[in-house]
Image (tube, rainbow, N blue to C red):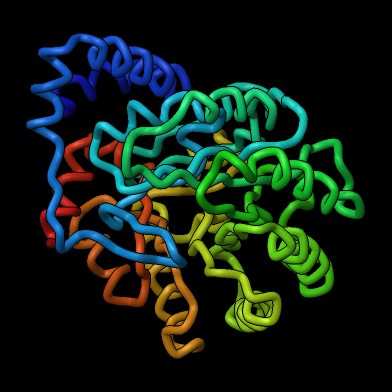
Length: 341
């Protein structure tokens, strides 16, 4: 079905296609008989898929990456595709419109996307209103938190703390996002001193709660292995629960799309198949460097069951997809789960 719709969706701009698809999905699922047919076609569950990770029970290890549902408006519908968990956000304390459009671009030859969305979202309070509506039974929801563009790096901790406190009662785990390339200077927060300060502050608040939530760090694929070593040391010293490897890349060296088209698109984070190998390399490195003691959620270039299995074999415990959905369609979730089972 999706492969029939795909040519028409690709006639729309990527951002318009995204919101059109979500609206269509919502309408279709509201029809009981269609909803039932949809479930029978796309759902696949097996006891062998269940995972217990950082104290949470996942009905399966396949998740939807952050960025797809920035405001927590679509995670209930996306759960119908059979995801074991959905990560909402990135959310910031105050609403922000993000970067000017166009800011999302397809690279069909590479089965990739370039985005410079810029943390466009309705703010943490609007997200809480969505989360208060409840979630489907068994679905794990993670909250991916960031800082507003107008907030300086010196004051960034305050933004992360605000998001943490606001979302704490409503999400199952947190992801600290300091690795998006689309907020000016954000990646500088991955440096040793500011990252230690940020993570230790959040963990101190978290551990003071009667029921602390798992907390993870999302890292960039453009870090050197030396920088990754520093991050591992920090993550372990502040007793974070894991890392998400990886975010989008600013590297363009593996693209087959012509250089003129890339120049015309301009800056942004690259996701999709060109990221597959690098993300897997980083997962393997972290797994071996920590002797498998650090939980890793693998994301980046998963467009097939083979891609997902490679990340799990490299050391990831869970995986997430996003760009693969754009090119392969929603059946990808079921295919990955069948392959794992």
